[in-house]
Amino acid sequence: MANRTFVVGVGMTKFEKPGSRDWEYPDMAKEAVGKALQDAGVAYEQVEQAYAGSVYGSMGQRALYETGMTGIPVMTVANACATGSSALFMARQAVKGGLADCVLALGMEKMEKGSLGAGMGKSKVTIIDHHLNAMVSGRPWEMDKAPMPQMFGNAGREHMEKYGSTPEHYAWIGWKNHKHSVHNPYAQFQDEYSLDQVKDATMIYDPLTKLQCSPTSDGAAAAIVVSERFVDEHDLGDRAVEIAGQHIATDTPDSFAGGSSIQVVGFGCSQRAARRAMEEAGVGIEEVDVIELHDCFSANELITYEALGMAAVGEGHKLVDDQATTYGGTWVVNPSGGLISKGHPLGATGIAQCAELTWQLRGQAGDRQVPNARVALQHNIGLGSACAVAVYKPAT
Image (cartoon, rainbow, N blue to C red; front, side):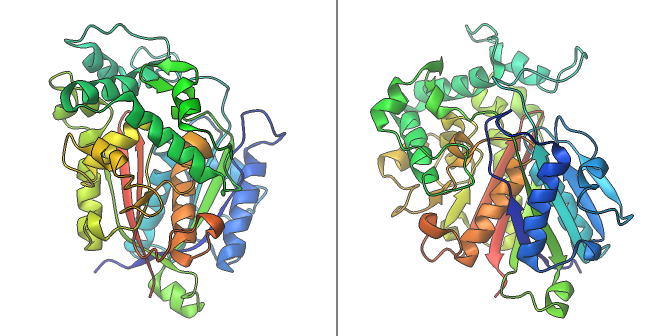
């Protein structure tokens, strides 16, 4: 039988504008991991394995040297924007499989200003070449110099054409997430805007304005994942949050068939990962209270409502009309401010989502606390592609 798995400690740095703080990866790691260890009441010497995620950074070993050199296995993880969740997934696998009782998951990133490109390095085969080719297939769209806003903007356009959503629906999501971030001290931005300010901001790729797009960011986050035995032996039940279900899904041929931009940006991956994670956890989406969702662009939040089963296909914008995804609604989505306002240091994003949901289920989220939160869901996607979904519950 698989072991139950628990998060007993989380920590993160404030997410910041690239270059605004004089620090390097070891500094980030020391701050985030130190906070997670303190939160757990665990010494670094008790950690048996570590998985350190970064898309652009150096090896995890070097990042952790200032935290400690205990000789344990340290693995460097890179999996596009799902890197942090992938490190968490691997940490959980080690505990779930009985290979270790206490494992560290770390995510970190130092980024450049400006929009992400199509890939890394000099290879002609980029991580999203299939996606770009499928996006322009059969559509009157030329390749834009900023492919990420274009891909998600086109998904929004497709939804508007097929199902009747409007630019106002996407702007509301941006407005909501900026409003949520006001109470998050770790967020890169903590400014509230009017809906008109979101709509009238600089257009990045129609229908997405600047205030509906996640920024590049610097930052790190860490989580301590342990077994039930470790929880019991160290009396950590008061801070333990169970990872009750978790899955990572990748593309199938359907992602690239038919020229659907909604499919290209990961609808099918999200659907499959969510189904498997919720099946393992034994919950339905209607039982979830709080969600940290990968809103790299507001269009992705709306279409992901449908992928997660929160709304029927083609009806995600009705949740916006009903304001069902903010405080007082059916779910609170992105109480942290999401990627749009909290920031998006690629390797750290997934574990920062874990941290937020851990605080929410413990009742430690301060002024952004979701009342009576008992079940939480995390959604983190990286084109290339990988989608990670996890379901969290309190230990008791």
